[in-house]
Amino acid sequence: MLKKKNKENSETPDNNAEITAENGQEQSTDAEATPAAEEKLKEELSQANDKYLRLYAEFDNFRRRTIKEREDARKTEGKDVIVALLPVLDDFERALRAMDKATEVASVKEGVELIQNKLKGILTQKGLKEMRSIGQPFDADIHEAVTSVPVPDDQKGQVIDEMEKGYELNDKVIRFAKVIVGA
Image (cartoon, rainbow, N blue to C red; front, side, top):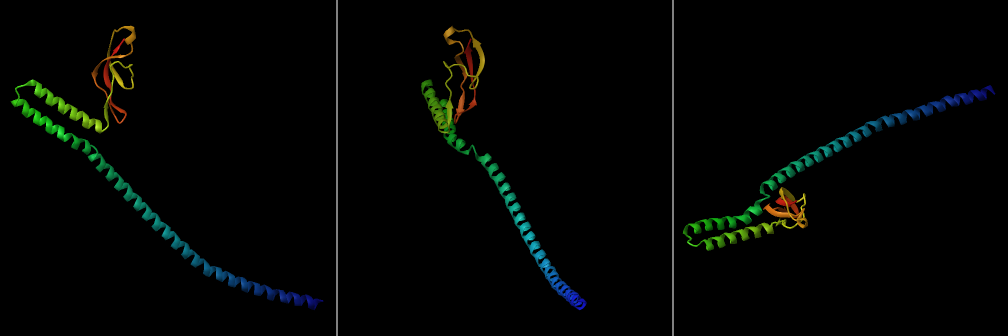
């Protein structure tokens, strides 16, 4: 029985040696795999950093380009209105020359009215609208009360007269109407 136990014990160390040898090979295989995995991770990291830097540079270029485009747009945003008003300016110059030679006031007046109508037409095309105020109830959102005058009861709180016209550009008030309100 002792011999049997010794045999079993003697087999056990051999088995342990085999197991240790196998583990050693596995460990050396893991050790060999670790540097390769580490290099692979380093490569992935460098690729991710490169991708990040390129994306950051692309975004920075986009931001700069957008800022420049906005500046250019601001510089030329009124260009179409100014170009549309140039013929009116020419008409005023012709009217001034005609006034020097004119003998009739009626024809000069008619010429100035034509120029005014042309100017109003151009501004209307660009989205400008005059606000109607006289006879309307006073509204602090679109009117600026200059003064109030005593009126009959049926006209109280209404706009009696207009000192300056109010204007809307594309349905947004750009100048409040200065009005006299009935009190």
